[in-house]
Length: 335
Image (cartoon, rainbow, N blue to C red):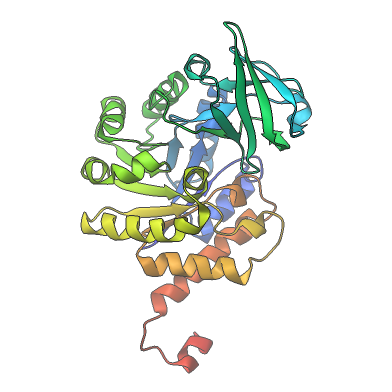
């Protein structure tokens, strides 16, 4: 059975939509801790549990660098701007920015490059002071609040944040049995989380080069994996992602480990009522590769058509389950 995972957010976190999503076939509702305040975790879980019997998955922030909140929600940087990077969280503007977790600041060195968000605004550190860093904007663009960032070399980051630990403990106390570890880099990351959640279901998210290279040691320790193509494409050129995806799925199937695939499945349905033909083909191709489930993120968290997005995924799954290489054209058209 192909499963559908749906992320809940401002566009869907209400009784009517959650119940409609469940009716359309969602098997697991995901709470993204990267975009959920710790103080809201308990109340969100209570709401979902009161609306549906579909289980909830808490998805950790994990070992990811992010920028802080930005003035008026986003800031445009111009190539050549000088920007101060602060060690503590500030509201970013044209002259200033900060990054989390706080341990990142002390690890940054002169000439390090930092790319932020998918528009790939790029900063190069050109000055190092004890209380601040000076960066030059190499590539301008818009940076929103709380966006993922990539430094051009590995940093030492805890696999789970203090917020993750607290949220997981809340979840466990409320009967949550599904947890996802973002940016799983190695087997030790998995062991750290196992100490918290025990034998509950653990989904390791493969979204970094380290995670791909260490897949062999990760797979035996987890229940499922999830390929996050978006974050993976921050580190790997996008033209390689389709083939990395194929290889990961094939490798995981050797270990009989279910694989979910996320990011940009129906991206156009954030703002439109139907997908592009390329998106429908991508979803079908992902299923033909052997994926065990599909994950809707922005489509259902912030999109205007969350229910229609799930309906479309379910429709493609139905066609996949009916299809075989021997199916006649007439049967394909009429099915």
